[in-house]
Image 1 (cartoon, rainbow, N blue to C red):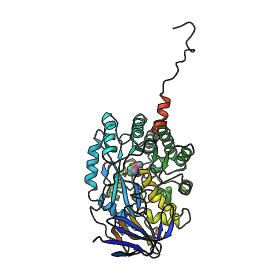
Image 2: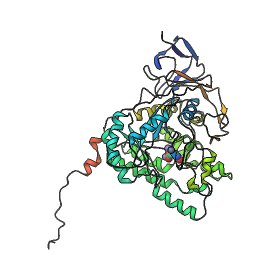
Image 3: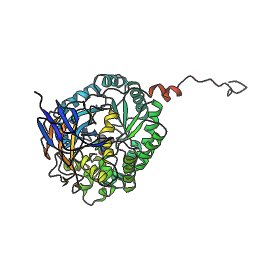
Image 4: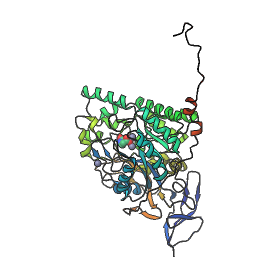
Length: 486
Ligand code: URP
Ligand code: ZN
Ligand code: ZN
Ligand code: ZN
C-alpha cells in the first residue's frame, strides 16, 4: 500500500489563487487537492500558507572562482535552501577556458550527487569556438539544460566579448534556449579598478566605487539589443539598479521577451554596508553588482509589484571571512559573492508581504512560479496542482526568528542578514514528498535531490529574427559611383 501524506487545514497560496484546501501527496507527487482529505500521515497546517516550494534560479555551489572555491557545496547549500523553504536550486556549470561543456556537466553531476533538494543547471559560456557551438546542441537536446549564461564582467577570466555573445545568442535562438547575462561592462570595471588601486583606494568600498550603476545599465542595454538582433529572449541576472531595470522595462514595453532578476540582498541591504569601519564586515558583503542606495532598492521593489522584474534570487556564492581576506590591501582580490539561500523566502516575506509591497500571490510568483515557467519546468515545479512534484513550503506566520550565523545551515562564519528579524518561517518543507523540515526542524537528506531536466522552449522568436532581416540580400545602390569612374 502507498504511504500518503496530507497537508491539512492550511490555506493554499499559488501565483493566481488563495483558497482553503488540504493537499494530498503520494509517491512524491500531489494527487489530490480539496476539503477534508484523509491519508496515512497528517501534517497540520492550521494557520499556515501552503505554497509551491521556492526555486532559487541563481546559485554557485562549490564553484572555482577568484583563486578559491565558494564554501557551500551542494550538501550545505541545499540544506540551507530547504531550511528556508527553497526546494530547487539552479546552479551554473562552469567550463574552464577551452574545456568541453560536456566535461563541465560531468563535474557538476559529481558535485550535485550530495544535493538534498532538486536542482538543475545553467551552462556558462566562458569561451567560444566551433566545439562550444556544437556542444550547445547536445547540452540542450540531451542534457536537459536550456539556459546559457554569459559574463559581461570579470575581464581576463570569465568575460565574453560582444562577438562571442552574439554568436552564442544566435545559437540559443536556434536551439530554443534562453541566454542569461551577468550585465556589467567588464572593460570599464577593469579601468575603474586600476585607477582606484593606483590612487590607494584599496579597501572593500573600492569595489562599490568600481562598479557604478552606469556599468550595469550599459551592459543590460547592450545585451538586450544583441539578443534582439539574434532573435533570442534574454534573462538578466542580479538586476540591482534603476538603470538596468529601466532598460528591461523599456525592452518589455517594446515587445521584447526580457526578464530581470533582483536578489534578496539588493532589495534589503544597501551601500552603507561598504562604509562600515570593520574591514571584514564590508568585505563579507563584496559582490557584483554591489549593494546600491535606497533609490535603486525602491525601483526593484516597484519592479516586483508591477511585473517588470520577474524573479527574486540569491546568487548564493558563500565565502568565509578567511577567503574574503585574500583581498586585504587590494579589493579586487576579495572573492565576489554573498550567501542568502536560507534567508531569501523569510526575508522577502517579511520585507515584501508583511509591508504590503507585494501580495502573497506575487510572493509565490517571484520566488517560484515565474522562474519555473521561464526555465520550462512548470508545472512539474512552481505549482500546487494535481500531478505536480510535491515541492511544498508550509509557511507559518506565527513563527519568527532573528537571523544569526550561529544557527544557519550554511557553512560560512557570518551571515549578511545577521540581526534581521523575520516574521514567518517554514513549519514544513517537502521535497518531492519527503518532509525535509518538520515542525520547524531541519531533516534534510543527503543525496535526496534529483536533477530536473528542462527541454528547449519553442523557438518562437527565430522566425522573426532581426538578424535574418538585417542580413537579407539588399539592393545594390549604384548612384554613389563618381561620374568619372574609378
Ligand atoms: O559577486 C558575485 N555575484 N559572485 C558570484 C558570481 C556572479 O557574478 O554571479
Ligand atoms: Zn578547483
Ligand atoms: Zn554574476
Ligand atoms: Zn552569480
